[in-house]
Image (tube, rainbow, N blue to C red; front, side, top):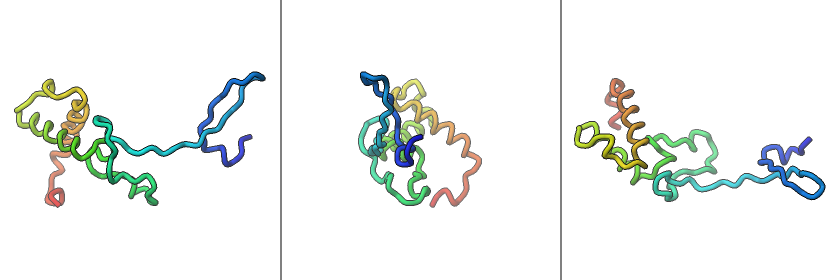
Length: 117
């Protein structure tokens, strides 16, 4: 049985001369990065105390940076206004634009005054 300090660690089997040995690794926390540009995301705090403080509320928050999110929303608006088609969007941005379009259709009937503030 493993010791309590090793239970949450990642395990890896290591080949040695006499057979195999189980080696435990401590998990390292990495900085949150933008999936498209690779830049570090600001305002994402993995050391926050409560679970709600860790959870981003903006659309694509914790996934895309502010600049990239703005670009995705602009492209989504261009598609809604029939200025561009989905085929004209960059391949990296296309899944996020499609998700924003789906989310916009889902929330179209839920518009009220509270959404403005």
